[in-house]
Image (cartoon, rainbow, N blue to C red; front, side):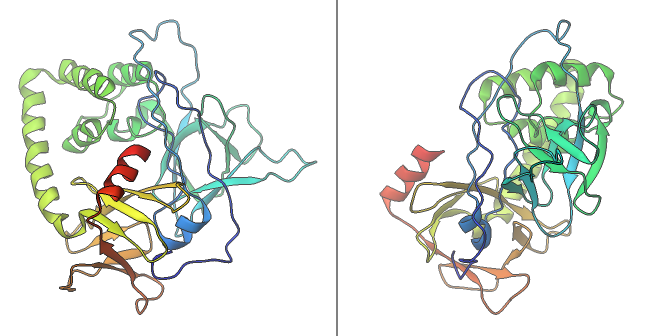
Length: 309
């Protein structure tokens, strides 16, 4: 894809869920990064799942634990754990940095079952691939709301955690795409902090958001790449893309901690010295072959992306 890509890569399919409303705070975790190789290997579909139940008193679903994908390569997702008589089949992959909630208790040794409502997906608990982050109450709010976690579980977090709510948490809540759920979680934060402390954090969030939008200016907009993919990067850095066959990709443009460069996925860094209208993503492993995104001004591109996402 783009400036090249692994045409010979094994083709794996992403984890999919039916589009149902009213179950989780956030969508299921993304299963690919928006790089040329991943774009050819395993596009993702990201249904929005929400649960706005007002009570958790009668809910005995296990909270599970949280893990983060680490290393330089995506971690494979399998359709089942290793039962000894049949080799598990890969059904997708999660890029480094992805955080997911799931279960290890009562599961086969060395396996982690993702918390999905209507499909089975498993990760190997390889210490070179995953970092185990612990149970619900040990997490920051920004972790909880960006995983497939029910709202009743967020309420339990609010009552039981010792974690402070920070600007990062407010940003994660504001990034929730379901307005109803976002307002519910914001109200939970307001009640926990009090009006004055909550408004102070929100003011800090808006100041940071303005700086971020400005920093991301060069990477924002609609683009197309040589392989026929079309892309949109929104003001917050969210990336959505479409293959010619309609399969979808999602990722995010990130700002480095020292604010000196922008990245997408784990392998690409934006060349901000280019002065042409296109943008060049420099490959970490092959800087001489940039991934070139050309500006796309077609109404058709906006309609296709708007319809798909």
